[in-house]
Structures are given as structure tokens and as C-alpha cells.
Length: 256
Image 1 (cartoon, rainbow, N blue to C red):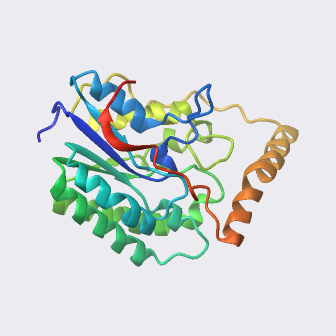
Image 2: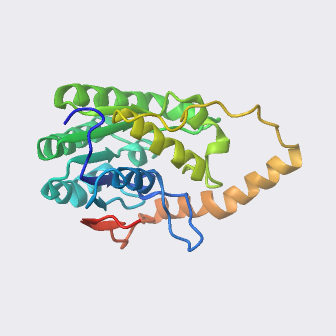
Image 3: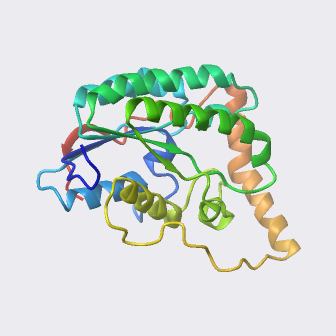
């Protein structure tokens, strides 16, 4: 299918980024960039269908085992695949294995959809990110190679200074906030060839650095509410997605 195509169906595959954390709605559920994109695509195509198989915490092996075949069987016009970042952000990671599993996922999905979209995931700028950049760059290089081989679109979010700004991230420092997800939806929309509705990479105004007390208070709250539980799950082999079903398991008409 060509650019600026009217897509009639969309399946999203991935982890918490695609599930929509932490773009929280008033009822406590998450929206996220994939839901926002689906709404915009649905406005152009009567009878538009949407499935979102993403589940928070999933590693690339789990995405391959639990989501890829289901997504391929749906035969959607458009499929997005974002995975592997949960793997490379772990203390120990076999990057080549992650890349191999991503390749397996792409090879299963690409022939079964009209357009596959891959992404260079965004990264929150800060003191922790640099230690993981070599792994991420290796993963991104494979994404570029797979896209060239299979005719997929790559949306480069990592290169965006704005999406790397901590103000685009939730308090857990792992997930984008509502504005971050809105910008990702716009980035994918434009990558599909649609007319821009906004500048998704527009710079933010200069940041006002909070005082020492405010920074220490935020750090303590982050450690207590987010970092501690995350470490606890790693030590016990648990995941935030254990037992959680896909967000939208079936390719059904989108009703907003």
C-alpha cells in the first residue's frame, strides 16, 4: 500500500509503550499513541477495525510467542511492532538474541500485512540512559536493516531531543506521559504519509530547574513508588504483565 493510504484495519504489537502507559484516563485505564492513531485512522475509513495485543512488561521472546502469530493471522492492512527495549534495559542482556527474535517477528509479520511499522524507541535523557545506548544502537541498526529488507517504515523517535526531555515522561521515568504519546501518534501519522496536524518534534520551552529539595523529594518518591517495586519484580522473576490479557485481543470495529 502506498503512502497516505486509507487503512481499514490496524493491529498493534508490543509492550507497555504500545499498551499506552502512562497516558492515564480518568477511569484509570491507559490510552496511548496506538489508540490515538487508531482514532485518527478510523475517521478516514468507515468500518475501521483495530486490535492492540500489547501487554506491559513483555520481553521480545514473549511478544514473539504470544502476539506475533495472532497478529499475523488477523491479516490487517497496518501492523506496528515495537519490542526489545525491556530486554536491553535489563542489567544482563544477550543483545544478539534479542535482535534475532525481532528478526523472527518481522519475518512472520511482514508478509501478512500491507504495511509494517517499526520504531526506534524514545529514551529519557538522564544519567542512566548512556549505559544502555550501545545496546539500543545495536537494536536500532537491526531495525533499519529489517525495514530495508521487508519494506517496513521506521519511525525514529530516539533521535528526538523533545521526546527525550524528562518533561515528556511520567513519574515512573519509564513511560511517556499523555503529551509524549500524543506526539508519537502524530509521528506515526506523518510517517504513514498523512498531512501533519502538528509538529510532533516541536521543542519545549526552556526548562526551569527545580530546587534541591524538590529534586530530592521527587527522587525519594520515585524510588519508593516505582524503582523499589521494579527491583522487587526483577529479583522474584515477576512481571507487571503477568496474567494480564491483551488490551484489545480481537480485530473489531473501532468505536472510540
